[in-house]
Image (tube, rainbow, N blue to C red; front, side):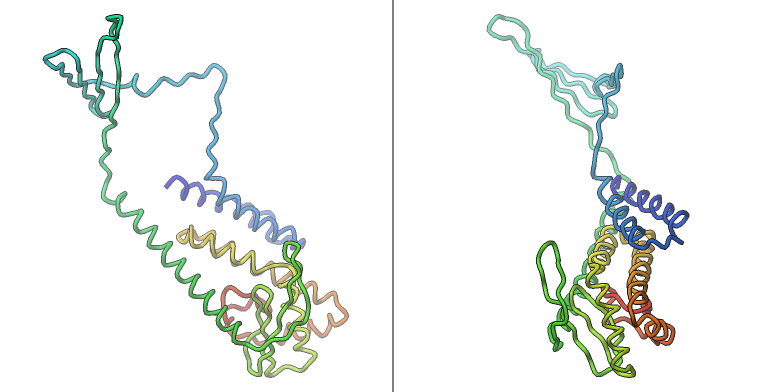
Length: 287
């Protein structure tokens, strides 16, 4: 519970700062780094426990606060049992060593706290939500992977991922499938578009592939699995997609075909995305 509360508070504070200070920022690379970095911080910082010892500060041991309510001495005088109202039970064993000196051994057994029913149910509700979110993510990813595996493709470029050069795959379909990319695979439906417009759509998705935008979306989806009840995680994903589209659009507008791309952008009629894990032109995801 402590982790969930701190992580939720962290996402709220970081996203609030973004909304107030960076929402209209045009340096989209910096905005993307802020969104991804603060989301990671919000998830990781609650796992760090800092113990700071202040000079002159002394914390009395918990046993000093025990209030004994009853005690019992065994007939042989070797065992004393003291019971406290809230702290549990203390067992004190008094024995003699080889020099006939008393040796005292103290063992404390904490009392089991009584938890309200809602505190017992709440963890199961949370774990159920995590299970459903993880299942939805896994099914979506498997369906997308299965479809991409069946599509014919051609290699159009290469991308460097952590020092490993991998080919970029392009699948051009004879239907109206909205253009999207996932990982290093691009899918474009060419129905209703000219050859030059298809090339511009491919160029837009190629920016998503080169920038590694799929990793950002997967981070947001994993955060949604852990914090499925947190509305700020959903807002993080929405803003991340918006920034991705700004980055890709700006890159395309700076090319030689920038004017043609601008015309295509304003006349693009988008349907729903095939997968919420992918990127799409103008970020027009509909349910």
